Structures are given as C-alpha cells and as structure tokens.
Amino acid sequence: MFGKLMNRYFYGKSGQGDFEKEDLPQTRWQLFWEMLRVRFSGLMRLNLMYVIVWLPAIFFIGRALLYGYSGLVNLSEYQSQMEAGSIAAEAYQEYFAQFQDAMRSLLFSTLVFLIPCIGITGPATAGLCYVTRNWARDEHAFIWSDYKDAIKANWKPALLNSFITGLVPVMLYVCCTFYGSMAQSQSAVFLLPQVICIVLGVLWLMMQMYIYPQIVTYDLNYKGVIRNGLLMAIGRLPMTVGLNLLALVPTLIFLAVSLLTPYFQYAVMIYALYYILIGFSLHRFICASYTNGVFDKLINSKIEGVQVGRGLYVEEEDDGEDKSEEDAAEDSAALPDDASAPSSENKAESAND
Image (cartoon, rainbow, N blue to C red):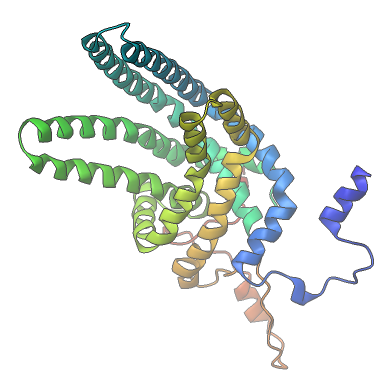
C-alpha cells in the first residue's frame, strides 16, 4: 500500500495519458512547486547532512534558552511571593536587577561562543547552496558527492563570509549597548549611530541569500560578491525582506508558544525537529528558486552565451530554418574566465581535476 502511494505521488495516477509539453513549468512559481514535490525527500536527506555543522551552535543556543527559561521561572516565583507578601518589594527589585544582569551576561557569552560555531558553517552552506541551486532549476546534483565537491571548491570565500556573519551579532550587541547607554546618559543624538548599526547588521544578514549562491555560481572575488549582494538586497528589498521574514516564521511561532503557553518543552522539541529534518535545506531551496530568476535578469542575460531560464519550458518558434553548425558551436561554447562570467555548472567538479 505504501509503495503504491509513493508511486502515485511521484508518477501520478495511472491512465491519465502522456505528459505534454504544455504541462512543463513555464514560470518560476510552477517550477518551484514541481521541484519541491520531486526533491522533498532529497531535501530532508541533504538537511540531515548539513545540520551536523550546526550542532555546536545548536548546543549553545539551547543552553542559553534553558538558562533563560529557568531564570524566568524563578523570577515569576519571586513575583508571586512579593504579591503574597512573603517578601518585600525592595527584595524583589534587587532580584530583578540581578536577573537582568545575568541575562545580559548570558546573551553576550552566547554570542561570543557562536562566533566560531557559525564560522565553521560557511563551507557546508556553500555545498548546500550548490545542490539546492541545481535542484531549483531542475538540474541533477548528487546529494553527497556534489555537496562534498562544492565544499572543496568554495571553502575559502565561504569560510571568510561565515566568520564575518558570526561576528555581526556580537558587534550589534556591543554597539547597541554602548550607544544606548550614551543616549540615556548624555544625548538622544547617540540613537542615530545605534539605528545605523542595526540597519547595517540586518542588511548584512539579509544579503546572505545572495552571497552564497554567487560564491558557488560565479568566478568572482569576494569583494565583487559582496558588492553584488548589497546591490541585489537593496534593489530587491521587498522580496529580500519577505523571504527573510518567511525564514523567521518558525522562530516566531516557537517564541510565541514558549512565552505565552506552558508548553515550552514541547515547543523546543518541535522547533529542533523542524530544523533537524528540513528547516535549513527548505529555506535555501526557497532562496535558490528566487535567486535563480534574479541572476538570470541581472547577470546572466548580460553575458553572451549564457543560458537563461534553466528549468523553464519556452515554446520555440519554428521559422523553417535550422541552425547552422557554426551557430550551434557558438551556443555550446564555454563561458569566458573573467570576473563577471559564471563558472562552469560543474564548478565543484572542475576543482577536483
């Protein structure tokens, strides 16, 4: 029964007739849903490999959540005792001040520990982006071998990028704390650099959806990757913000359930299970489905000889004339090795030669 169900899921109902050209995806939206259906199990297997590099970060984040939850429980008990008259209000205020200091120390120490934990994820993220990029445009990619080869081919810029990303939360915390205290003690003018720091930090985090796909697709130096990522993030700001907010939905649901209901333990289990099974790869697949279209419009269409709209069916007009052998040779020619041209589609494989 299970086998028949899976065959029906992947191959459709029997007796429906042959697959027509008109049934092929003609838009990015259609291609996304079709590839998600076909590659869903592969995304789960890919996620199980990728999540390994995030285990140190998950440990420190989980540790901070447990300590924070324990502190909130104790604070709630102190508040109940104060309301019942068991302890004085001054004792509660003193404990509340200690609680705030402990939470600040816990947050800062966790962010510091996360610097190397996030830093080591860059190469694996490049491998994840390579596989999901190919799947998002209906191209083949082996889960293990292409993932591994992409790591070997792109580990240097990916590692640099991930360590910078690991530093961003710490820098945001330090800047916000410093300028916030200056604004309270001296002048509200210091709120301006605080806001600027927050905007720059958030912008850097949003740029990540463009940076890693560029690293695995184009032969660009890291400076060029950052410049393109910044321009794309600003130029496509509504979709960039929307996709990043979409990635935060599971976290927002987890926080809402944890803070507003007594089911914190169950929320932690479901939240962790989501990211262990498919959370990372699904987010990257969604981003790849979008960035493939952005790259086609902004980069690939401006480079001679680069195929645009991979994975999409475009009905060819029959003008009665066949291509000459010279035209066919030009269409299949290799891309130039300059800084603005994409690398070969088997960039990771060529690195092993």
